Structures are given as C-alpha cells and as structure tokens.
Length: 559
Image (cartoon, rainbow, N blue to C red):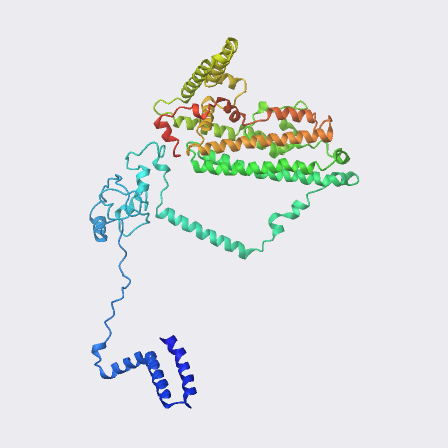
C-alpha cells in the first residue's frame, strides 16, 4: 500500500493540476482520491491516536512481559550422579558405592556406560567434579566409563582378541597432579619463548653458524701449489655427506633409544614414530645417491690435478659412517681388512675408541629381532605353533599341485610326469627344511643368517599377514630397514663405479686396492638381508589356511 500510494499520489496531483482548467467536478474527484490514498497510508497512525484519546487506558494496556531466565548461582548438576545433593551426602556419610561395570549398551552420548546409574546420565569425559566420590578414584580420575571398561582394572574380563597384554601400570592416569604439571610446562614454555625473543636478536647467519661452515673449505692444492678449481667441489660434496651422516645418526639414535626404553613391551605408537624417522633416513639416502651425479661432473684428469695432495686421507676414515654401520647392525666378521689391520686402526686416535664402543652396543637389527621374538611369543596361545602351521600349509599346497599334475597326465609323457613329480617333491622338502629349527641353527653357525629361528618366523608371519592392523606397523618397520639397506648398497655401488671411472685400477689414497676393495665390501655389507631371505619362506595368500580364532583376534587390534 505504501509503495502504491507513494507512486499514485504524485500521479493524481499531476492530473489535478492539469484538470483545473476543465471541470470543478474533476478537481473534487482528484482530491477525494488523494485523501483516500493518504488515509490508507497514515490511517493506522490516526487510529492509534484516537484510541489513546477516547478509549480507556487499561483496555489496551500491553500484556505483562514474561520473566527473563536468569543465570543460576548454584553449580551445575553433576552428570555422574542422579542428584547433586545425593552425591554430596554420599561423599560425606558413606564410602563410594561399588559399581558393576557391566556394559548395557549405548546411551545419550553414544559411549559405553555402566549399569544401574547409566541410563539417566550421559557417559562423557569429565575432569574433577563437584563432590562426586567417584572422581577421587586414584586409577582414572575423570576418565569416562568406557575407559575404565577397556582398562580392566577392576578385574573384569574383556575380549582377548581386542585388548591384550595391557597391564594396569601401563594405562595413562590423568589426575590433578598430571594436569597441573601439564599446565606448568605450557606456562614455562611460553615464558621461555618470550624470554628468547626479548633477550636476543637472532640472525640467520648466527643461527646456522655460517661463518664456521663457509670458511671450512680450505684447498690443499692452494697450500702447496696453485689452487685447483674442482677441489672446492670435492670438499663441499664430502662436507655435505658428513652433515647428512650426522642427521641420519640423529634419527637412528632416536629409534634405538625408543627401543631401549620399551624393551619389555614397545607400543605401536613408538613403532609408528620409528617408521616415520626411518622413512626420513630413506629420503636422505636417496639424496646421497644423487649427489654422486654432481661429483661425476668432475673429469678424471681434473681429479688427478689435486688427488696427490690428499694422501693418506680417505673416505674410509669417516667416523660417522663407521658408527652408522655398527649401529644398524654390521658385524665385525663382515669387515674386509686392508693393509693388514682392522678398519678402526685407520681412524684418528680420538675417534677410534668411540667407534669400537658402538660395536658392543645393541644394534637396530638386534632390537628388531627381539621385537619379532616377542611378537611370536604373544601369538603362542592355545598351543599355536606357526612353524607347524606353515608346514601343514606347504604339504597341502604340494598335494594340490600333485593332483593337478596327475589330472593332466595325458598331456605329457611318462618321463615328463615323473620329472614334474620329482621336482615338486624336492621343492616341498626344501621348503619344509626352512621351518626346521635344527636346519636354521646350521645357517646361524655358518653366518648365513643373523636372526634367531623365532625372529625369522616373526618376519615370515609379518609378511604373510601384513594387512592386519596389529601387524601393519611391524611390516612398515621391516620395509624401511630393507630400503635403508638397499640404498646404502646403491650408494656403495655408485661410489665404486665412480672410482673405476676416475682411477681405473689404481689404489686408493688410504692404501686400499681401490675399485677391487669397494666391490668386495659391496658383496658383504648387507645388514638386513634376513628380511629379504624371508621371502623364500612365503606361500601365496590363497594357500594360507585361516588362523585360529584366538590368534586371529590378536592381529586385528594392536595391544
């Protein structure tokens, strides 16, 4: 109405002005029409004015406003109890009730709840509450019901296939002290960050100590003769190698520290962290292999211009690389001596003892071997023997192959049939010998294998059931170690090929036979070869019978 009257009143006024000279009746019509339109627009206001003048005030008085809900002053109700007063009286007058943690199902929040008092309260995580005696339990503080259920602290049974080997002391406990420590640590961290910002003006060059790094390229050729251009590249490449070796050792040492702290029972999160850090080592080793491409831009003749100044220095004397070999698990009998003395005799006196100590320390290979043994011990339920399980599967697979050969015997001569059956029998017997503990002991004696029989069975089990959730972290760990072993081998091979290209059959600056020595080391330097040999033990997935229920349950969820 407002829009129409706003437009039409102007129209009528215009028509009125135009019709003055024609007829007075027309003027009256226009005035009336305009008055009606203005009444439609402002009539509601006029009616309200008239109502206020002629009608009693109380007849049109507004209704009383509804009371506005106010913020309550008392504390909110405790969801752990039906009534706050009941909870307070229970805390003051009686000991906490012994609740029966029987799972009845899902409640309001979709979480597991206890019986009796669970249907009228949501089971939600809470911190220390107002006067609830159950919040004072030393085991779980403000943990929800489902946490207490899976922890099995009160001795109630839980499915062994879901949670196993979880001790009471291993369960994290959140209480006021730990929460206070967490808050104190965050507060200290914030203060330290702002203290560092206000007490110094950190510079990029100072932080990286670039003055030391960039001034560390001293050319030996310039000390005794004219400087050789390519010697600068040679120094930078090897300095970069040593920096990367330092980072690799930093990552590997962190992994061995985690294994050392969790020798009794290392948790899946620790295995996952180890996989991530070893994955970083894998990427660094890829860079080290690629760096040889840069070094090979130097010609053999350019290398000869400064090589004579470097003797008797040699890459063989790299302390960090020797420590890395020992930490990963290279044994002393894998070493190849040159110049008639052990490898550590070629090191500086200050480095020699440090390298020797790493030979005595536990290695990554030994830690992983212990982890695999514990994995197999954890699966020894209901008299399950994985070696016997695999032997039965091997016999079944061989029997299926034998029946298939006999079924299609008409398509081959009797001699071919006998040959096929003999080959199948030899293959079956050889495969069965792999799962013999006595035969494995012989392989350990001859240094063909490094891992124990139980650890080897662990590798085979992990590779056979790698898709199971509890087994996947172990498979990732084994895969990362094999990749490290392969990439170190690739680096050795590229180095050996480059030496052959640059020096031919010349001896090394450190006194070795050069390319021949590097090739011999390459053949004996594999550390995690047992993980690769385990592929010989495997059967196709379709040939593996189902695991027993108790064993299969342990592979579904990690402990």
